[in-house]
Length: 194
Image 1 (tube, rainbow, N blue to C red):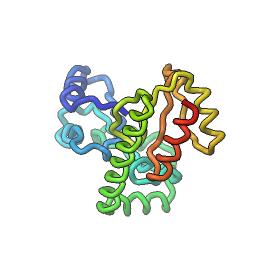
Image 2 (image 1 turned 30 degrees about the vertical axis):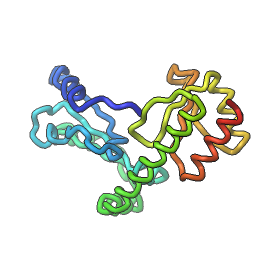
Image 3 (image 1 turned 90 degrees about the horizontal axis):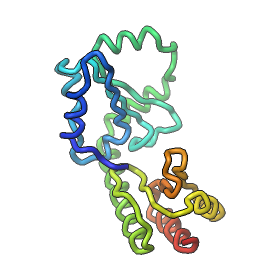
Image 4 (image 1 turned 180 degrees about the vertical axis):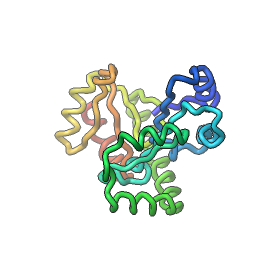
């Protein structure tokens, strides 16, 4: 959930030779107030090796439809079109994605609710003296010592988190932002097991 600055991202893109593909996963870009504008590189053709990927699974809430999209140089898109499986996205998912792109009010509301939820979780974790990383997406990382045990204990209370040992962060849990009530319930349970 951390954030690289637009300047750092630009510097990285500039440092890559033009014959090496650069794939940037922008799954959480809609949560940012001022995201780096990488699409201008695709539009202008200045970096034909740049591929941007986005999803409807996060802020748009369409995870079950398994739909996303990519933006790249027409030559790269053409190569991908030649190898993709036919009918890889169903019509319902396509229609839902197109409707989501036009629903700016929903996007703004989702961003606002998420921002409030992150603040609620951050305040609660701070009150419990649980270290955490500032987040720019829809989850927060909390350092709980034995995160695998905390994961099990939280599950007993019906709270599902994600242990991060697979990412070489065995002391950390990923806690997704929920409703204010869900966030409060999670913080209460963390207080009990702490």
